[in-house]
Each structure stands twice: as C-alpha cells, then as structure tokens.
Image (cartoon, rainbow, N blue to C red; front, side, top):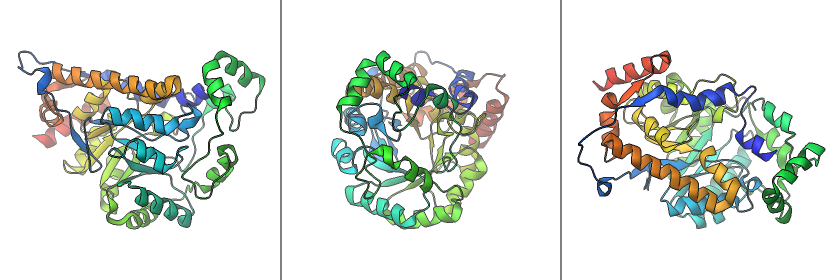
Amino acid sequence: MVYGYLDGGADEERALRRSVTAYNDIELRHAVLHGIGHDDMDLRTKILGVETELPFFVTSCAGQRMFHADGEVATARAAKKHGCFMALSQLTTSTFEDVRAAHPDGAKALQLYVWRDRVLLKEVLDRAKEVGFTSLALTADFSWVGNRERETKTGFTVPPSYSMRQCIDAVKAPAWSFDFMSRVPYGYKAVPDADFPAESLVDFIAAQMKPEFDWKDAEWLISEWGDTGPVALKGVASGADAVRAVETGFKAVWVSNHGGRQLEDSVATIDVLPEVRRMVGPDVEVILDGGVRRGIDVVKGLALGADAVAVGRAYLYGLAAGGYEGVDKALTLLSRDVYLAMGLLGCRTVAELKAKAPELVLVNPHNALAGRQLKLLRDVEL
C-alpha cells in the first residue's frame, strides 16, 4: 500500500515513466588522457545560498514517518554525513527543531504549499525563520491534486482502513508493519496547533490547498519572507513561466513536474531544462528534479543547465527500506556515481562540466524536443 503511494504517478503513469526514460536519450562523450586523479575532484557548490559538498540534494517529501519511524530526522542525519543539502516539507512529520538539530548546516530550505489561509502560512514562515531556515521553495504544481490511480488500485488510505487488501500487504511486509504498529502515531508538525494524529488532518490540509493561488499571492509570500534568503518557485515547466518567476521576485527556478504525480503526459523535466536555462540566462539559479534515479542523471542535469539537482524517490526507497542506514546507502551510491561520471568525463568541478557540456552532450535524434532545446542552449553559449 505505502510502496504504491511512494512509487506511483498520475493516471497511467506515462509522465512518471517518461521522466525517467528521458535521461536515456542523452549521451555523453567520455574523455581520455585527461590527467585528472581522484584527489583532483571537487564537487562543492552552493544551493539556495548554502555551501554544500555535493551538487545534488535530498528534496522535500511529506509525511516521511509514514515510510519509517525516524522519518525526516533519519534523512537529515544521512544528509549531514554526506555534506548534502536538504529541503524539508511543510507537511513534515518531524519537528522543525529536530530536523535542524540533526543537520544544522544543511537542512535550511523549507518547501511550502499554496495554502489559502495567510495567517496560518505566516505563522509557519515565522517559525521557520526562528529555527534557522534560510530559503523557501514554493510548490506551485500541487494546487490541484493529480489522479493517482495506483493508490486507488492498492487501496491506499489515510488512516489505514485495514481492508483485506491492506492486511495482506501488511503480512507481506512484516518489518514495515512492525515499525508502523509499534510507533507513536505521527502528526504533521509544521501545522500550527496540530496536536492530533496526521490521519485527522487530511481533510484540513486538502481544504487548505488554494487552486486559485496566483502570481500576486506569490509576491505576498516573497515579501513576507523578506531578506531572510532566496525563494525558489518549484514546479516550473516552461521558459516563459521561469522568466515571469524571476520578474516576480523569485531568486531561483525549480524545474519540476512533481515526480510525474500530477498531469498525465506532463513534459519530462530534463527535456525542458535547456529552454528554462536559455530563457533566464546564466545568472539565475536553476534546480532540476524529476526522474533522477542514478548519479549519471545528476551529471546530465548539470550539463544541460541545472545548478543543482534534487533527488526524491532515489533516497526515499532507502528510507522506507532501512531508515537512516537506507538513506545513507542511497546517498553513497548516488555520490559514487556522480564522482565516477565526472572523472570519466574529465571534469574536476561542476563549473568545468558546464563549460565543456556543449562538446560532451549528445541527444538521441529520436528526442526531437531535447535536441532542439540543446541546440538553442549551445547557440546562446556561443
């Protein structure tokens, strides 16, 4: 049941599958006799104003204690071990304080939803400032909730209905079932005055989503955050929206399709990334997520214009399987893949990768959109 929620997408999941397979259309030319050794590698970068050891980071996901009892704290601990930046969901099931204590130097971005109650939202912003968050990410592609057919098929409910299907699934996953049944019921800790279980909050949260949230509302949010730090617009899928985001006051553009969980046949984010970079120019921070499963996907995203790449399912599978140890393992694999790919490409740093990208990147001719976008990006660089 929970695996279906984590692994699934919208409708028939074409957008989800395309988000993953789109990376297969991008090929890279390896380098030879480049003279770069293991000790020459330096993948440090800056993400939303924070210095970090890696050019990818763990992105926000609501309700992580649904996957494992240690939830967001386990994720934060693993991210700290790897020097990895972290974004925390507004619908976190661990407190701001606990997550920040687990990773004080890296868990510094708070992801927000488009809520209708400004008083409530301002209270969340004020709390975020108090505990040390220095950046925001406004998720703008979730004001309408996508049709998650797999969740219907697997019988996913909050709270569990203990249907025959759910009970059978629970028996098949004894470790998760024991973890779930033996822990204290989780709650959404960033919702003010929500001292009751998360199950009772579902209807409240659904009612808070504001489909009519618009650019004026976004301006209000940016002004409320003030000079605390950069604000990113998450969910951008076109160059035009990216430009308007910058004009509105966003300091970063986050290219995302919500993991293929919203609009069926939504464009794969790696396909639209070069368009976004071309439209906003070289000086605006651009973040990419969607379909990232391996470190080579991170490298491709950086080469095509992203300043940083956010990973979601890639570490959440680890969290669900083994808590802190699972996330640690996932980040270890991703880091190893990134270092190896960069070394084989003959790139010491992210800056070198970006500079060499026009010569390194090839796009499968069957992917006409990505090919056109890459050509336009190269024309701009020349």
